[in-house]
Length: 302
Image 1 (spheres, helix red, strand yellow):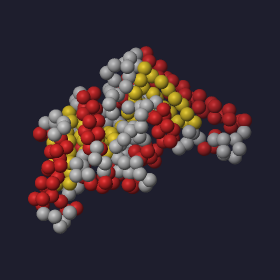
Image 2 (image 1 turned 90 degrees about the vertical axis):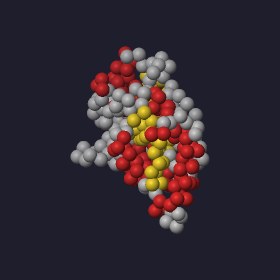
Image 3 (image 1 turned 135 degrees about the horizontal axis):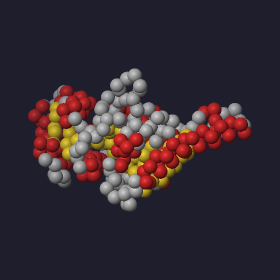
Image 4 (image 1 turned 45 degrees about the vertical axis):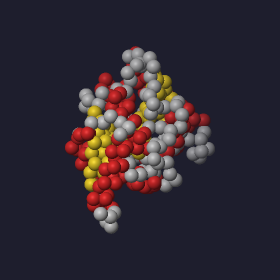
């Protein structure tokens, strides 16, 4: 993520989305916090409409249902355009895209590539009667397939000086690409600078995962790898966290201790969803974290 000149925001125009600051959707209001130059930064608002009974392949849709689909899309488009008009009045460079598409994530991936997005933002809304936020299938598939940095946001507001927590694995467990940790930290630094926040870097390892190795040897290997990784970055020593703990529990604990706003972590693009996330760590924690999560891939498509 070299710059944030192009931000794609996924909007669910089926929802009652005017709920954030300035009567804007949360995902939009958070996207605006990345904008330092309104004339330079372009924001694309993408909404994907779809109803099975209005689709062409559903019982050979007739003229009456075609009219209903046009009316349905018009309502969605008006909601999208109302947000765009409000932002344009404030001087933002806004584009909109309403597409009849299913599955939605495929269109979002296509739009992110066509737009050459520097960042994709999608809201992960909680189930109404539960505190937990379960990621939808669309969100999981974006984690798996979206080639751009993907920010999954929740309703919680960021602090005035947000806490950014970057999770790394410098010993390259789980066949993780060598350069991914560098990209995670570079992305986290970019986000921290853009938002005026504070960056922490965490490497968690569990000694019990290698029961036949001596504890001192394990600690030295991880400590050396962690310090070598951070030699390329100017990060305060008290913001470097090396812990002998399972990454899943460490992420949850440090998120609470630091009261972090955004967690930056890596993911791979693999055929099976269970293999797409580094050591399955993200799969185990994404539904439980209160922080927003920024997913970084080894390589992006520009």
